[in-house]
Length: 250
Image (cartoon, rainbow, N blue to C red; front, side, top):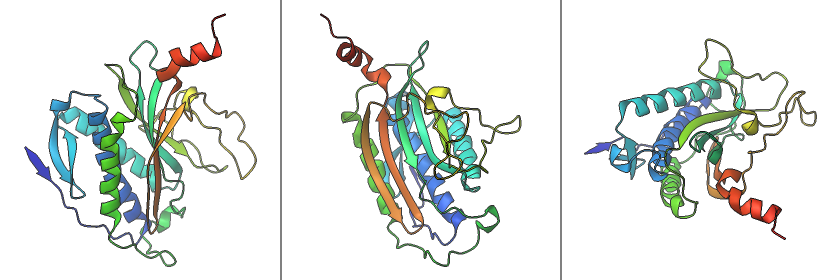
């Protein structure tokens, strides 16, 4: 069974269009990562095409709904210009549930504009050429080949979507009873700044940020769309090796 999608290049003439293009790519990237990292059995994914290249899509309705809702929640915050990055975090099975891999999509270079102007056409940043689908295609292809460069994962891993806020005293976490977000665990919290130099009180850098090994994926640049992507492998994947180095036998 094959699904086919429209591969036409988006016209990124305003900020809303930039965010929509990111959401479209993020959805495909999540399905690809879940398939390539064997989070679910590979036969549970169907063959599809997106950005004029073969991709995989989960056929399980609940998985598809979770991804759809999670990306929609990210898009809401992106339109407020409050996010600097989004990451898909793969956790070890209980009881540790330690973060093993973090696939990070950095959108810190996206424009920061008032939320009332997301549909206002850009004046000093014209729409790009029609190469964005080609760059997305190259990024998805790179994701599909990453498994050979990453250490294997144990069975029964779980995953979640984590966002990081931009720095600034006026940017606050979207937490509350009417939002889909919860605070990330401390080991994945970043140290936030109120301005260019002052650290926000009560924030410290989580011990699992940055990982032990980083693998670049690709940079995507097209007009106002500027994204970096990389993978961080966490300490938990290398614990035995690191413990031996830090505590050598006499």
